Image (cartoon, rainbow, N blue to C red; front, top):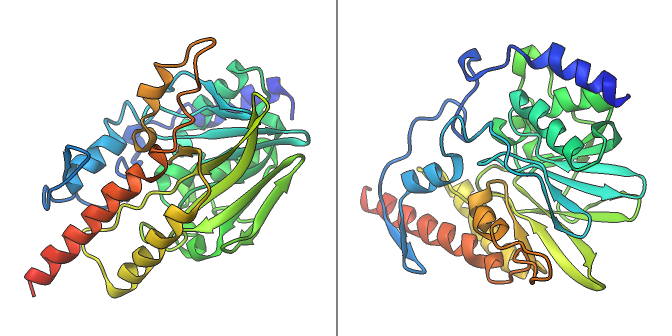
Amino acid sequence: MTSRKIKACLVAGFTALTPAAGFAQSSVPGAGAPPDHPAVTVNGVTYTPASILNRNMGTPAEQETAFTPHRIIGNIYYVGLKKLTSFLIVTTQGNILINTTYERNVPTIAKSIEQLGFKTGDIKIILGNHAHGDHMEGDAALKQMTGAEVIVMAEDVKMLEGITPGGQKHPIDKVVHDGDTVKLGDVTLTARLVAGHTPGCTAWTMPVVDGGKSYNVVFGCSLRSPGTISPEVEAQMERSLKVWPALPCDVMLGDHPAQYQMEEKFAKVKPGAPNPFIDKATCTTEMKIQEAMFRAVLKEQAGKK
């Protein structure tokens, strides 16, 4: 599809998509606000379930306002919003997009891609971190626009089938399992199951070369557990908390910018300066926050029995 046709499709298909149209604003559509307890302190900062959700989601306007598109490292670019991430991976045989976010944001993401000098129509594969509308609701719209293949983690298929904006069936072209790889051109991504937030929460990993050096990049999935933790979710979280720190990581990204301090790091990007996104410490920071909250919620839950 040509760039001109894509732009026409964007104008025709999305003009009416606004928050008033009934799109969920939280990361769990239809869920109420989380409680402001328990509280945990990690690295001198105190968090509650409510403060974490607010940190991640911000305001409705921040969920649909583009953040400055930029190169993160190597062939990986940021094309997302102030509070919802979207990543473009450029390969020798077309491009990969991780996280379409809400359907109404697809035109904004497409504009960011074009601003970086790439073509939205060159997207060949669509991936996502997990089956919530704020990360994967736009899959059908972007597939219709580009013809890209939508690849998802098996354990999230059921939840994705429930994401049907405008009555559209959620596209699923290929299903992967923990440890499977997705290849396009000179890029290979590995899918790692880190369930808990959703049954198929996926951390995508890949090597990247930048400045003649090789680095490991992790597109992390949220480890935020639900307010009420079932035995099944507890088992999922315990497994994920073992998988996460074992992932080779030099650059940690996430499904929300706050999970890897995107704005603070972007402000440090300067010609000739070290790349602030290369930060091993960030690889486990979010995991430590979410593990502390997970164990605090379990303790509070046990005390109510």
